[in-house]
Structure formats: structure tokens, C-alpha cells
Length: 177
Image (cartoon, rainbow, N blue to C red; front, side, top):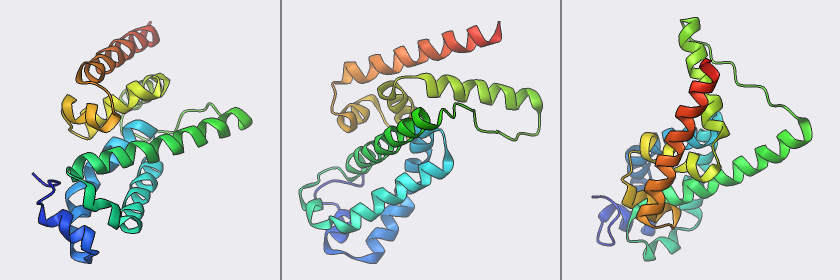
């Protein structure tokens, strides 16, 4: 699995090799964008957060020598980037009082409405729960990997996921009635 201390990809990143950066991007970018999109609710912001992760990867390559799990490192960096963006957006919303949902253009009106309801329900989750859902569903991480990324216990990661699903289910049922 990529990301072990004896991993040639990680060694290439530490050495500053462009081919290693390209390989890391090819290997992880799609999952990182999906997870960030789940956390932030915006593809554009998700892509910006992933770009920030890879820029920081290049800038702090010497720190990578101490990394044992590249995947965990990248998803942790993503979580921090997403939280910075989420907190900034939260401040912007408070000052501008935006509150409007994104326009989700879909071929069918019913599908668009379901997507919008789900998006509103996801955005209403506390950031810790939204992060767990995004890392699990969009990032494809295990609860052990999520716990490592979030710096929590395995049971905390699993509990946050369970509570998030309960809140999503409840919110979606409330909106349906």
C-alpha cells in the first residue's frame, strides 16, 4: 500500500522528483476531491482544497521524511485545508447571510430536489460528523484510517459516522413531510 516509510513514491516526494508528485496526484487526487466535496459541499472549493494539499506537499517535502503513511498524511492535510475553507465560508455567511442552497442542475426535477435535500442535510451536520461521512463515503477510508486522519479513536470515528447517518435520516424524513 502506498505511503509506508519504505515506499518509493514517498521517497521520490522527499527527493522532490516531479514524477513522484505526478504519481501521487494520479493515485490520490480523485479520492481527495471527492472527500473534500463531501466536507465542503462545493466542487470548486474541494478542488481548491486539494490543490492546497499538493502545493503544501511540494513546499514541505523535507517534512515528509517522517511520514509513514502517505495516504493518512494527505487525508489529514485535506481535512485541515477543508476546515480552513469551511471556517472562512462560515464567517462569510455570517456577514453576508447568504444561506441559499447551490443550484443543482439535474435532468429530472425530482432527482434535483432529492440531491438538494441531501446536500442541505449534509451541510447541517456538525463539521466533525460531515468530515467522517466524507472520508468514509467519498474518500473510501476505513474507520481506522479515519480515526488516524482525525486524531480520534476508532470508536469515536465510528460513532460520529453513526450519529451523522441518524441525523441525515431524521432531517430527510422531516423535509419529506
